[in-house]
Amino acid sequence: QAKRQGRNHFHFYSADISDRFHESVTLRNQLQHVLEQGALTLYYQPIVRAHDHAVVGVEALLRWQREDGSFVPPSEFIPIAEDTGQIIPISSWVLHQACVDGIKLQKFGELSVAVNLSARQFSRANFIDSLSHTLNLTGFSSRLLHIELTESVLMEDTNRAFQQLQKLRDRHFVISLDDFGTGFSSLGYLKTLPVDILKIDRGFIQDVTENDDDAAITRSIITLAKQLNLKVIAEGVETPEQAKFVEDAGVHYIQGYYFARPMPLEQLLDFLAENKVSGSH
Ligand code: C2E
Ligand code: MG
Ligand code: MG
Ligand code: MG
Image (cartoon, rainbow, N blue to C red; front, side, top):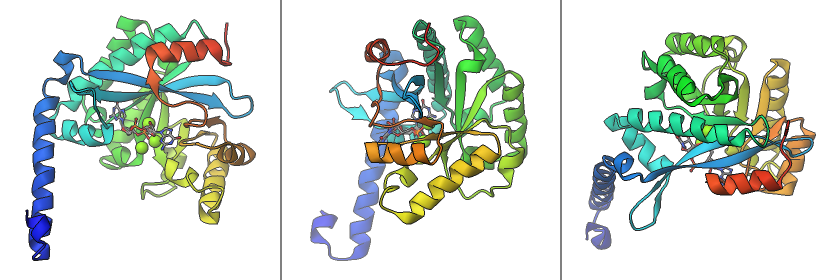
């Protein structure tokens, strides 16, 4: 109402905030039961090698399907789950499910499974032990489990983050820096941080063939990563032109709608049966 009246800016603004507040309270309540209801699933998006487009692994992406069939995007419910602490049981479920599913992929080749980690999960004292426990239970290998973290997760408590990363490294987990280039951290930290892979943020790839700045940034990230002995994944590649650009720039791996969208496990198994897989046996 206040929106329609539009009498002054304040009314417009407060109505908007209150709409969003109600939406978030509703989501928060619904989110409480998602695990018991089995409303969460993992979708998987293939990641391909640049030079021959063979699939080398997948990224697990969380999906919440409501009773009416609609999907709530992770960008909406993960921040809420972080707030309420529900991210902890949800993340445990994600890790366990990704490992169970990861085992099923091994008949196609030595495929890695990447999972996204939230700050809250990463900073937990028993996180690495529970991770090892999950691997023992499922029989999945730490070398094939890629842990994706954003710069912001690492910047919350740099010393502690560094220790956690080192422990993960000691246990042979592979660590990826997600959405790379969007944080404001100094590049110097890359030299000492125990990470293995940089994922160039989709935001740079989107206009990489038209925008000289994005092109320069993308090329620079790839060059930098190579000099530091890191592997690079370009995220969000949607067109053959973008794929060609990042390949010419020397990227190692590519992920994006151009090759495959995130899909349920059953569909992924069909996809892997029909496409070239790296190290297949
Ligand atoms: P992310 O880890 O950077 O994941 C990549 C996102 O880009 C995914 O969105 C994927 O569907 C999307 N994407 C991939 N290729 C393309 C493309 O070619 N074009 C476009 N337009 N988009 C593409 P999604 O699945 O909505 O996930 C969004 C974010 O939610 C993820 O970003 C990640 O930060 C978070 N997330 C997803 N699953 C989990 C999870 O299990 N745990 C945690 N903590 N976070 C998760
Ligand atoms: Mg990710
Ligand atoms: Mg990303
Ligand atoms: Mg992202």
